[in-house]
Image 1: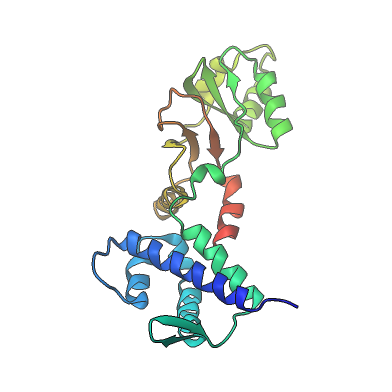
Image 2 (image 1 turned 90 degrees about the horizontal axis):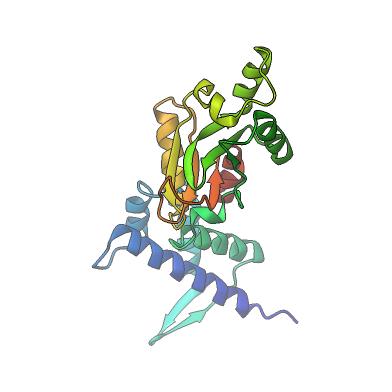
Amino acid sequence: MKDTNHNGERFLKAFASIERSLNEMAGSTVYNSFSRLLAVCSSRNTVVRTNQERLREYAELRNAIVHQRDDEEELIAIPTDSAVSDIERIARLIDRRRTALYYATKPVRTVSTDDTVTDAYHAMKNLGTTKIPVYRDQNYQGIVTMETIAGWAIDGGNEEVLCFDILERTKIERVVFLKSKSYLEDVINIYESAMKEGRRPPVIILTKNGSRNQRPEGIITAYDLPSILAALI
């Protein structure tokens, strides 16, 4: 027989985690109601803003299923499996420890300035991507795109030409370097800013300290946005 109380415990644990995260996000040092925390944090955090109405409903559900008796909380109703799964999902997303690296493509495939354009083309084709970072040792040099290679080929380019030689043909691709331990929210803010300013989404390269001269540990492009946005819904 299923232990229904377990659902209640899981729900309350997830709700407490969300409340704790919201307090940290808001920088609260005094008591704030859950509705007040939502109002403050929805303007600062995409996950909270996207799930704001759900969180209001879960706050009402939390009050409905708990009866305070003396110093103990007594469950008087049990949330459904779907409600428990959903609030746990939101709690994981709001948890400030979830990093951008979790959602990035890794390991990162790169090419060297001494690799040929043909090498870069085959690497992108195998990865199913349209851009690939170019490095000299651990030093970032730029990005080669499929668009650049197409233009080079149309102009009758020699297949032995090196990646370094066609970097100047690449349209300036905006690349942002972030620390590998940056939060998902940092990534979302970068893409939201680009959209508001009418710019193309940048390539985000994650390195240990956010330096362009460190080995890339993860990469996020516009192709990763659907999976990131799907996690927010």
